[in-house]
Image (cartoon, rainbow, N blue to C red; front, side, top):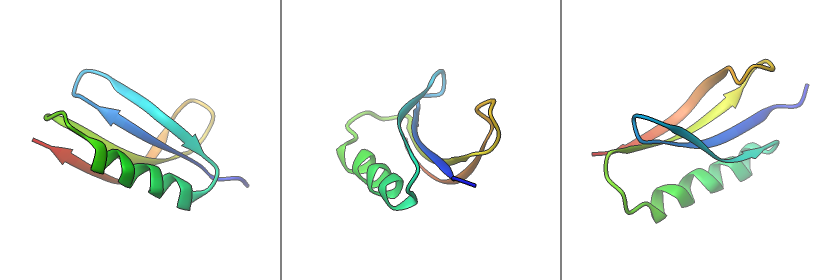
Length: 66
């Protein structure tokens, strides 16, 4: 079974998918780059693993900027 990962940015009102990956290493790279490039406060960067076909996910890690 192929694992799917997503990096998301959540501002409290909207959760936007930055990119989707089949490779966890690439997803982690994107997650870290999003953290380093962030200039906006009150957002959360999330790395999640997709489970199922209806966008259901399991959080792997997240970082909040407040």
